[in-house]
Length: 620
Image (cartoon, rainbow, N blue to C red; front, side, top):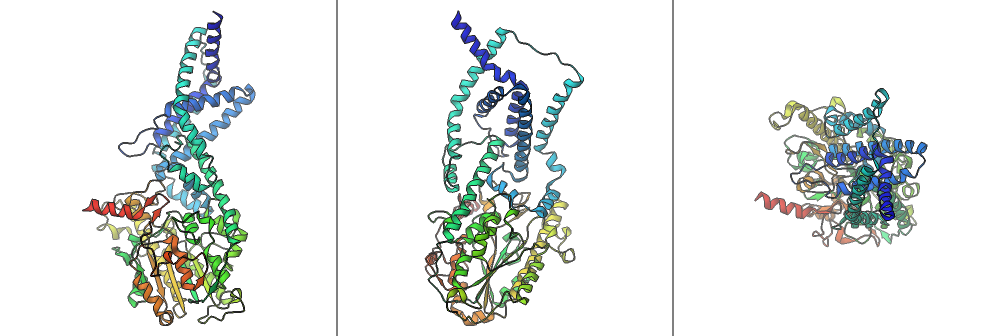
């Protein structure tokens, strides 16, 4: 009999953590299920995490055990704190799913880190609408109101307390123990996988873990947030590795083949919205004219390796290419090689300020660009102000020239050492381009396209969508004027100009129905086509073509080659005539030894060319 009493006591003991925190347990269990339903993909065969109910019970039970160990007076406030945190994270997670079709992940968290006060205001005015409130996010808001109502209700109406008899409590205890055992058995595999995921020593190791078949299922918003923060902390360590790599940079020699090299980095440029590439609107008339004159050579098969600015910057600034041993941060950045070779490197950006504390998370591209040591080793000249329009960034460049800080020379006079060479310039323009919100990317008096212009061409769109589409195309047209102004400043110099946007953009393509980019982990052909394909061209001034006919011919012959922008540094090093161990001719787009068959892997997961081939087969 005593044994049965002890067993009965154990069953009752098992219930105690839940009975001590009954309201918390019920509400958080319901919230977990609701979040899972609200973030269920829209695909036909989408299913909930198969161990949702068991693992969620186990997690809440563990939290209730911990709460039961806390003194009652303190426990109440701990629960309030948990409510606030879990509800806020749930709202953010579901909002991300509604807006980006992806729950919280390191990339989305990095987007927040990259957002300055200007972008934040634009972002809120763009997305904070009734459409969002009445989406799946509304269910979370209603649940929070329901919770508040249940808390307030007893203050106005006394509810009878339910006291269970010992026998009933024992039966409940049996049920709890059985369910708890099943939960542990079913959840142990995922718990071990989660531990492995959160034990990765590097971002590369974490990414490799995620490619495994039985990788962790981060089924709750709070777990996705913890993982994202953890990934961010690992990314910060990459900056340290980059500094270490920068200390080993060496340049053997430099011929200064191209006295002035200009790199223009655009922003959010949809290739299929470029007149140069067959778009039905005249969005790039000036670039088309430059191409007709023969100075501008357009490339037709170029992709970005990421659809996120900071990731693109890391990959194209580093001499590392996707597929090489190690990671981007294990290799030096090409601007440092240029400085080491004697080039004066100017970086004019309309997105990244030269203040490290502007970035919230070390995962942001701005951190390694603005790191004091790395910035000093990469750049001689930088602007310290952001501008509303990119035209003002060009004025900033003009001021540097007037002040004598930038001196463009057609003839290079090497000094006693490469570091003292006079007249060699690498000028990098980083534009705001077509970054959302599109209507703020061009002056109102330069509006050329209107919603009415698209009624016949895009009849399936609503008036509001056609208006946004016209705004995007106006931003493309304004960008055309900006790059043309930059080219004009070098057309009488011995200069070569490369234009490359960071990534593509979507603006109501086909029937996809959204703007900006989709930051989901899975990449299908439409996503690869619209968000990774980019315009790319090289302009050679008349003086440059006359003095470098061989280089110009190489450019013309390479215009149909497959290329991914992570390999850009190797072409730039070649154009400068820089000899260094970090240069590889097989990655140089202009080299006869260029490896055109190198896989173009997008976001380290999807092979662009395989996706393109599969799409062509389907079309047939």
